[in-house]
Length: 365
Image (cartoon, rainbow, N blue to C red; front, side, top):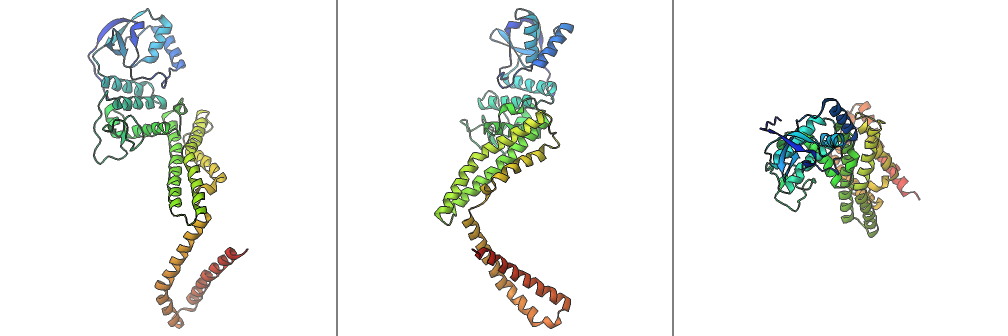
């Protein structure tokens, strides 16, 4: 995205320079290593007046360059005057420039991209900026200021999608989609914003994938147990299903957090790579399943009732559909090749013997 602006050079005291109002310093902290590098650069080459800002309440709000501003204050003090490029910028342009510069300066940092998209959605939710309206056929519609799919916020008429956000800031829609998934996980308390600190975009994507896979698994478990409660054949079975539902509702947040945080930790410490992250996430998920395998199973009574219905259905089908065909085989058995005939007899006996064997095992005290 190319941004061309008509600017003028203006001398301003460092104390009068303010950050971009859409950059949240508490969620998007200053990187001290980067500040140190910039201070060293300033001591060598001086201040470069290539930061763009707008006039606001007697000062200048910069669109980008916050690390340079911190380095400037520490290197020269707040009373020093420097030149800035000043122009007329509305809120939408302040956001777009911030997104563009973040894309250029922080190409691999996931947390920076997340805060950029977060700032856009929150500004849209406050009706500070406008986003294109989603297509009527668009899927995965969210409503600002929430990042959750399908959840209506206090401002019901502010829908958006990954496509509309991507179009506004000029980013790839798939990348914006991955970022929105990560932000949705943090809003659902499945992960924390800090989990993505110091991670690259690819690493953050693997963390979000791992957590989201666990979230979906336990959401399905919640749906399943809710159905089990409705179709429970006894009060005892219903109570067991309710206990499993309670556990699943707890795990729908707890398990994504556990798996996601562990994958983030291992990526940060280089115990695993982005290529092995998915495999490790599956291992983490399986380690939980080994200790709680009963949690995802229906009650034994419900399971037995279901199996009875399956067997009865199969037996009825055998009587209705196979009876005539088997009678034909009996009638013309003399015409069947002896080898084929023996195989058919053996197959029928296996069916019967297998059924008898399992019935005796279940009947045994």
